[in-house]
Image 1 (cartoon, rainbow, N blue to C red):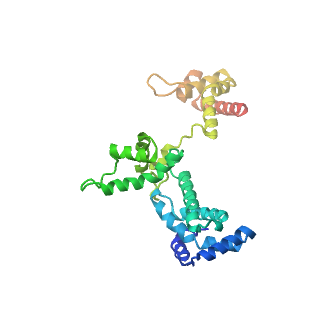
Image 2 (cartoon, rainbow, N blue to C red):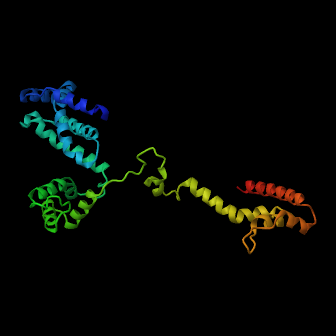
Image 3 (tube, rainbow, N blue to C red):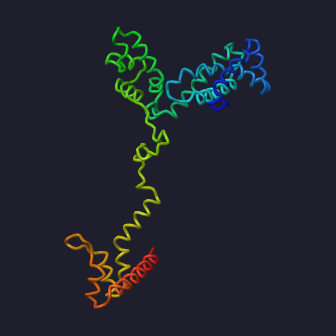
Length: 291
């Protein structure tokens, strides 16, 4: 396995110092592995080709994925190649392993890069992994003053589509997606500006179970809940609560005051307050029972 990213340089330096195998040693180790399942032989074959994985991984750094992860996936491909290697075929392991290393790295990139939904067919995958190099080739062949152009011309789109067996519109879509920059969802600093990061406004919790239950409960309280709670009050208590909290005057100044209600019922304002407090307790108890 590949060490942490902090030790990646040390890892690369170490694998580059591992000795290469001669063809005779490679054949001998391959026979030992196939005939007797010799794990030590398999280990030597893998270790001697780790530098190949590092070299291949550098070809895919443009996809924005950590090289350590690319190397690790490539090592998986190398191990698969060693397991299937047949020294009797007369092919060096380095040539045979290249396919497996690249295949594993390709699969990893497609699973983790934002293009996975586009690169679904074999032709689209070929487009995905060849478009960058083909664009660089067009730029190299361009006349002076045209080498900094980033987009493909209609003629170049047709060339790519024809060579990679895809539709021109697929080339245009792939180019657009590959040229678009990624946006970090999480805040990238500690300045307390979390609310401006995309994660703060892209999240949709309307269908989150807890939020949905709370929303339904609020709706019930604002309609049926209040009606049922008012039903447990006597006529005077109900009117006091309605006049104090549930009615709005024409001038939007709110309901009646304690003193206004005291004048209506011929009691003190303190008595109205006591009735109101007792009514609120009854209503809360009724709501608790119903919920």
